[in-house]
Image 1 (cartoon, rainbow, N blue to C red):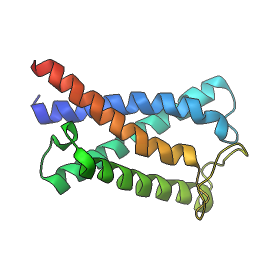
Image 2 (spheres, helix red, strand yellow):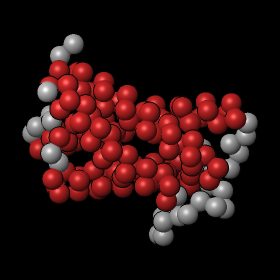
Image 3 (cartoon, rainbow, N blue to C red):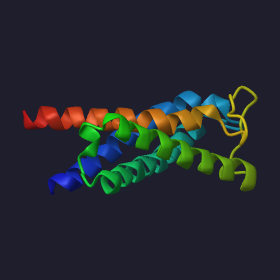
Image 4 (cartoon, one colour):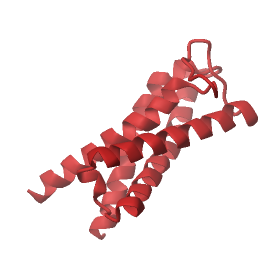
Length: 146
């Protein structure tokens, strides 16, 4: 397996793990989560999808910075790209899923962002976790090459 594909696989695996933990932690903020088995399944499926969103941010960074390893030393521009793309993608998905398709609903305890009324937890998730994922992958690669 080439180094680039290995990097993509590691980014995806770490992103799914981090997002699964986050999904479990925020599950009580949603209506109708139900049994523990149901929560594990729904959170797992959501984490798999979230992993792909992190890959979209990775690819966007590669295109913008013309460097497939841009995340190793992202600088302020890299973190800005993560912040803006995470904010736009997660807000858009949440708005459409909650307000148009009614795929899920928020519990009254979910803090919401003004204007669009989307949940703060899922938006923060896609802003915070990509940065943590990329830092973990960069550390893994540095350790591996040392």
